[in-house]
Structures are given as C-alpha cells and as structure tokens.
Length: 121
Image (cartoon, rainbow, N blue to C red):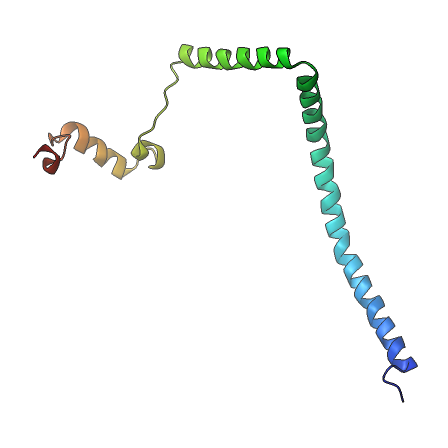
C-alpha cells in the first residue's frame, strides 16, 4: 500500500481547508487594518506629492517661500522673547520637584562657590 492513500489525501485536503478558513478569519482583521492604514496615508501622500511637484516645477518660488518662512519664524521668536533652555536639570527634572528646588538653593542661596575647589587649585 503506497504511503499516500486516498483517505490520507482527503484528510490532508480537509486539514488544509480548515487551516485556510482559520487563516482567512484572522486575516480579515489584518485586511481591515491594512485598508485603514491606506485610508489614513492616502491624503497625506497626496498633499506631499502636490507640494513636491510644485517645488520641482517652481524651485525659485519654493526657495523664496522657505526663506521667508524661516525669517518669519525667527522674527516671531524674537518678538515673543523665545528662550532656548539647554540646562539638563531644568529640561529633565519635573517642574516643582524637591531636587530642582535644592539645586536652585545650592546655586543661588547657599554661598557655595560656583567652581568646585579642585578646579580652583
């Protein structure tokens, strides 16, 4: 008797059908998710294609608009007293925390020298 009899082939075919139905039921969620992502990406892609197409057709206007926008943002920052903070203690420590108030006390009120002693020597 050969290893692949009719009954074995039929059971393999039935298992394949069951596997495919399980796969199709789980892929409907995947298909829905993929379609949703395409639905979200489509308007964004269309806007970007229009902008890049206009920039490629009119490079001088694109450069002028970009330059004007950059100068306008800088002017806006100057008029609103925009300040860039680079101190790590202020950036990464939560506002109003005890460690921030202790650091301010050490820097301002304690009377400790700003430069450590080993740096003075």
